[in-house]
Length: 213
Length: 222
Image (cartoon, rainbow over all chains, first blue to last red; front, side, top):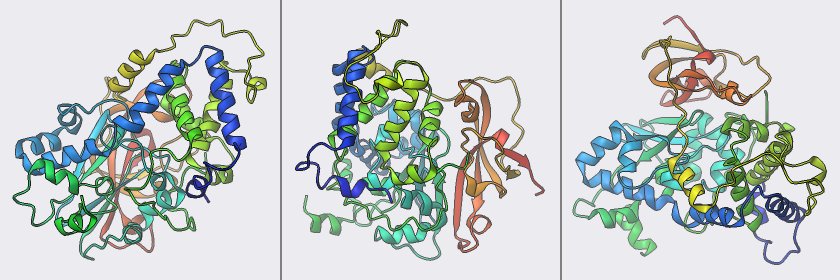
């Protein structure tokens, strides 16, 4: 079993593991050999830890909900439409938006590695990269959705997108009922990362109240 | 290659147990952060491409691949590539000091500004071509059984199954060749499969869409 979930509980108290030492040694070696600049390494980590993340995607979704022209552009050419908001680059070169409707729900996976639209969602969560999700998203999507507490009408069609190429998929969740008067800015709060992967729906105003802002 | 990475439909992998979205950090340990950064930074040296990188992670004992955490597999792949591409000697792994002379080859090692430019430029996989696509939307296609030993992006669960072409996505760099350092373009198709054709237990209300390159496909009777 992948043990992503178990290791991090101990990281602050345990002495350095073999793995930590192995990585430290590799970093020192690469820096010493002049193959990596430490400031470049830190800049890359900083970008994906703090700058690129699912708030980008939430911006895209909320704008699509409130701006019909933008939504049209997004469905025609997501890479270009998303770039117009300033989100472009690595792992988002060929972006496509798939829209949830009353008839169809979309779910995204990469069964072969863990391809994910970095430009709009950042780096994938541990569960997205795990064997349980990668194996069952294609063979038992309804069961997977249930594990996330997402129940769909039995009649609703589920489309699973296996990201085997460099195409990257972003789910456009359905706009929650009762948000007709909400601004784009407030709507962004309802757009979870998980709703843009398709394992959950966008939060309802009631859920948002319960969770507190 | 029947690697541990080809996970679609594999049974008994256990529950997903997702961490709550609001609680999950981007990295779970300092070493993960470093492995991620080192992989991207060394990738910018231009000594390997994305498919060579994926293939390096896949070339492991299948059980080890599944038992490793995600970034452990990245580390495995990175060490392998550094050695295979001659940037690091295998004897040097695990040593903090280099025992060999510096790489004499002139490599451009990006500074932060250049690195950020590379990240925001991305690397599109589309390529020009003179040839015509073999298939059109609506065509029935069968996914060939993979006979090659190397890298491929035709998942096992779709091999031998018939689907319908939903879209032709243009000519894209072909991963099977790219993993060997041969950059050639092939037409890419979005193929839609009915859940019941893939899985005996599936409901008719499930469809799986997979992006597949032309060499993976043969025409099937409509």
